Amino acid sequence: MNLKHDSQDWDLVIKGRSTLFDLNFKDLWRYRDLLLMFVKRDFVSFYKQTVLGPLWFFIQPIFTTLVFTFVFGNLAGISTDGLPQQLFYLTGITSWQYFSDCLTKTSTVFKDNASIFGKVYFPRLIMPLSIVVSNLVRFGVQLLLMICMMIYFTVFPVAKSSFHITEGIIIFPFLVLLMALLGLGLGLIITAMTTKYRDLTFLVTFGVQLLMYGTTVIYPLSYAKEKGYAYLVELNPMTGIIEAFRYAFLGKGEFTFASISYSVVVTFIILFLGIIIFNKTEKNFVDTI
Figure (cartoon, rainbow, N blue to C red):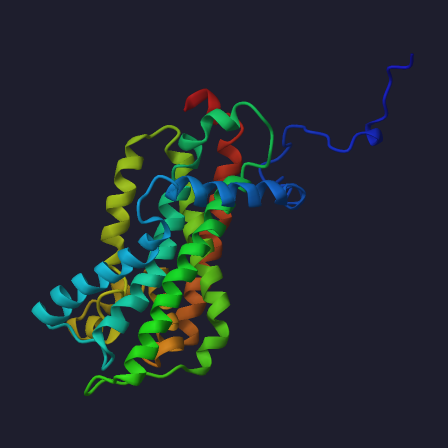
């Protein structure tokens, strides 16, 4: 029997990466069925032991919007640029929640899946990508809630408040992509760092909540300019995305080419660094985690 095989006889050859930039994205497409399986697993495992199930998709943004309306809108009296308070806060919550979910859940990929990564080969990026895709379901439900609220305020308008959908709606899919990629990139960097520095795991959730106050989720950019700290808020790449998101659906928000370009550049720099650092860490993280 001839035991010799030419390398071309194999469907797949697994070998160590020769360089840091050898990312081999073709494997992601080859394992797309696994990606869909992980998406389904994430959705089912998270809600199968809950009483209300997917209703939590609605409950969380509704209660958060009510709290923001009471605290920031009524008690603090922060302006909402002439928009209905509930709509103003809900648009910010919807966009920020998708970004933060992608970030926080991706930031624990290595720790949560160490047992799987140590036993079988598949492109490790499949796991964080599945998180980004599965979070789209939640984002879609919350977006539907936002649209229902828009319809409500159209039928029952609030005095001195107005909104309208603008031509900016055409870049809505691009804005969603930016939120996903920014959360993914930051999450990849953090999950790589947590293989050595476990304390980061405890700081992520707290840090993301603090970071929210550095964007225009609970106040308009015009308010930040009035108070003199708009330059700090604009350094956060999510500010340009949220402003564009709010402008697209409600017609209010400081959406400019410069702001969205800044968000795009920062997002792709962070994503590039995240993939490179993730790629480097995955080679030997099992030995350190």
